[in-house]
Length: 309
Image (cartoon, rainbow, N blue to C red; front, side, top):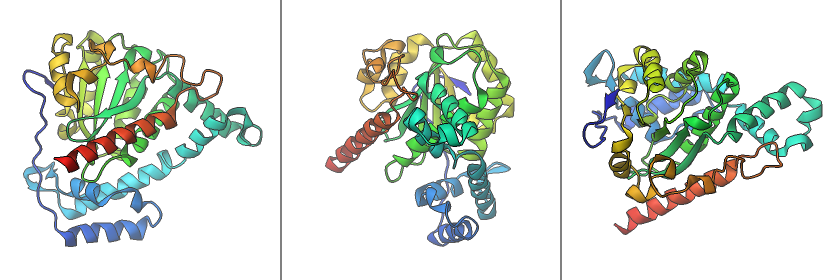
C-alpha cells in the first residue's frame, strides 16, 4: 500500500511466455475443467504466467506454479461463482420466478443478492486510459450490518460481468473507492472479500484507489495488509480529498470530466445509479443489465478510438 505522492502509476515486471507454454497450460486446464477453462482468456493465462515468482521476484513464476494457481481459481469458481448467474436471473424475475414457490431456500439467496445489489454501493462505470473497466465503490451506501455472503456474492457477480466485457489484451481492472462515511469494519466481510480476491481473481486487480484517508479506512488497512500478498498490497493507494481531482483525472479515460460529484467532480453518477434504484417496484431495483450495456459501450468507444490512432 502507498500514499500517492506523485502520479499514480503501477509498473509491473513481466517475463515472456512462449506459445508452447501457453498451449501446455491451456491443455492441462481443458483436461481437468472441460466446461470451465474457456472462461479464462489466453491473454489472462499469459498474464498470470508472466508475473514474477513470489519466492524470487527476479525470475518468472514456474509454469507448474502458474498452472496450479489457475486450477485453484477454477476449483474456487465451481463452489463460489458458477451458481450466481442463476440467482441473478431469479432476482430479475422476482415473485414470478418458479423458484419463489419451488425452491424457497434458493429464492431467499436470490432476494439477499438483490438486496446487496440494490444498495448501489458497487458498480461498473467507464474505463481507464488503457481500457480497463472501472469498478466504483461508494462506502456511504454500504450497510452497517451486511449479509456477508450476499455482499461478497454481489461483488463476485459484478467482477465476472466486468471481466467478460474486457477488450483483447486487457486482463485486469481498476477500483476507485469513495471512502467518505464508510460503515464500521466488518471483519468477516473483509476476510471473505480478501479470500475471494486472492483465490478467485489472482492478478485481476491493477489498482485500487481510496479517497479520502480516514480513521476507518486506516483501520481496515491495518486488518488486511498483513494478510495480503506483497503484489496485491502494492496496488492499493490512499489519496487525500485534495489530491482526488488530479490523481483520478490521470486514471480515467476522459480525465477530470469523468470525476463524479461525490469526489468533487461534475459527473453525476446518480442519474444512472440512483439510491432508490432504477426499478423501485421490482425485487432487483439495480439496473444490472443497463450497467453492463453502458460499460460495453464505453469499451467499444475505447476500441474504436484506438483503431483511429
